[in-house]
Length: 449
Image (cartoon, rainbow, N blue to C red):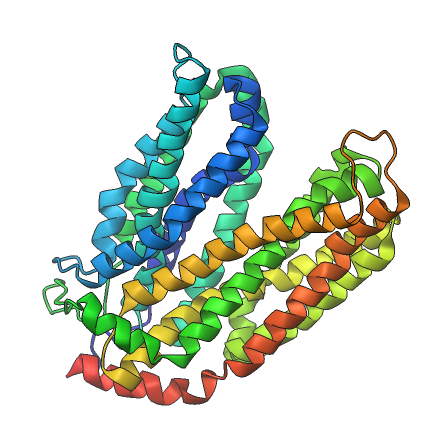
């Protein structure tokens, strides 16, 4: 007899799940592209102090991730484990975002820096950590069906990338017309609404009773941690996240220097960015068909090979704008399946852990993968700065040395080829697909019993 766990997710649930990422992208995009400029140009905080603050915040990330993962595993409510945290953190995300971009002008220089530290750590290390781990754990609680998981993550990255494009397209003009104080309130309200839509439109069908309430088992840390450490795919997934995000951060950091120094025109950053984003959306849209036919692992393997080709074209292109854009587009097309399928593998790894040990730990598994992402982002910034330093880049020089230009070309092109090759080796070792059908069958029987 078919049960709720057997049913495929409705399109409305997939779109509501994607709304959660759209809400999170408001914070991530504003902090990635606009926060530093806001602090330096609007608030008047020195750039070096901002860099130190962001590095200091990383010290809290590992601890806060682990604590939140353990808390989520012990959460038990009528809505389930992950879903209630989407509701509880929704208003906090919006309020904290507004506070982050609303530094009181009456504060002195030291007071403004203290305020920036407090609001940044509060949002990034506490509230966003709770929201992000709950969101990434939610998919493993929604369905055991691997195709639905691929479809959900594909929709997530399609709509999430559209949100990034929209924010980057309108924010600069809106800041000029409205000012940060009014604009950030609008963004905060939209963020709250999107996160609540995610909560309201998604259901944790795992352990769901006939009346819609969820009877999830509490998993204490002393039980979840030993089980997690027996999950071989957890280590590989965490390592994958580290090198994937080193790659993303290195390319992202080097884009400015490549456009400004190698191409000689900083304004082309918009065009180069579009050559990533649009193909990434296209890649995300076609990914469910590819994953259904070939499996996630094979699609990821092929995508990394394509990505390496694209970055090699960029590296060889030099000042040839057409070749650079073609290479970026090839790379962007590969990023869609890579993003969607790598994130869709995390619920599979949670399933594998339960299948092998009998312990289902969504929170702890997701938090450790999240930590891998944050480590990768931190190391990526270091790699980019090291490449610039090795080439003798001088930001105050009117003309850069040939060694600096070569280093920038390497960092924007061939360095990514090397990092993608490392990711390719890791995914070749992650053959979870060979067991996934049996895992799905056994867990379906267990949760329907």
